[in-house]
Length: 350
Ligand code: TXA
Ligand code: MG
Image 1 (spheres, rainbow, N blue to C red):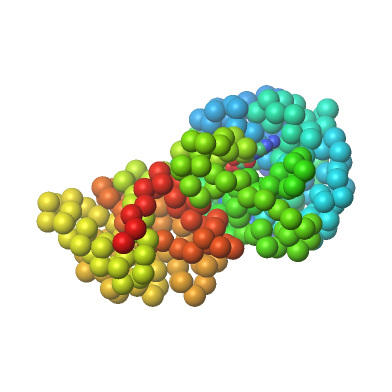
Image 2 (cartoon, rainbow, N blue to C red):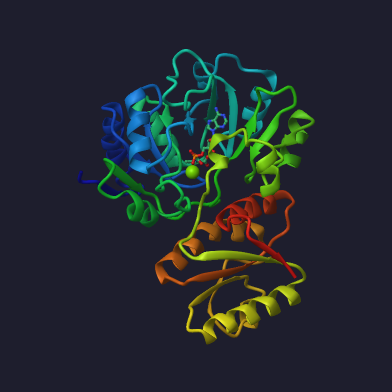
């Protein structure tokens, strides 16, 4: 299949969105930017569009898709019931990086929800995403627009790398803002529960709806063997770079010294090594290919650099990657959740 790739600018936006909208209406697949990561969109109410999405991504079809809407009012079309908590969260955080899990309405096919009676819904905060939903009149089911298991795409180039030739169209809207997927909160439980941490943190949610729990599998592999993650996607190995990734945790001095030692050892054997450092530390490493993921003073920069740096190291074909670790509160929780998954929970305390 030939994939149409269009850079979306203010001057051509209307025309390009019209073309993309037509493809969606005919059951086709269009990748588009959101504020979190790029999504791979199809008509959420058509079973066969969901099947095409799973095929293009190589994704297991028991892993449900998020339905994207452009107007909070449509929540009641997608969900069977809309509790007060959902209304409050929509008012406060939509459009934005928050996905809510609710009982699904009759309209949503089981193909879209991976066979579940619940559905994930979100209203993205990006003019191209919102423009596409409105222009097409279609609710858009969209997982991240990467091949299953690869880091989520934060630029159109990443989508092209993974899906060129497999989908109808890619809308290039430049680099996304946040760089990590939306927070997922399950509202079908007595106490709402975060199934995937993201930019909207537990503290932010609790200010609006009171107590919120966190799925215990988010930061620990041991917990995964005891409990089953409630978001089916969280059980799969994810975001895995080709190299063997290890995270070092401890004081900055200890981490830098342990990584330097490990890198020197590997390089003496002729093995190539990548290092994930920060603005504050990159100058402290003597060997390996050193990249800065962002600044420790600005966690948002780390979030937005994470997936790109993993893809860059794939391109460089290093055998090992050594990464610094980050705090696990607030946005750091989402960063460490993704980094730990990428590392297969391979963490060394120093
Ligand atoms: O930021 C995002 O959320 C991006 C952009 C494109 O919107 N989308 C995204 O979709 O990350 P995806 O498919 O890569 O991740 C969706 C996650 C999966 O882990 C899936 O298992 C979970 O949401 N999920 C979807 N529906 C669910 C449901 N009914 N119950 C529990 N988990 C669900
Ligand atoms: Mg994904």
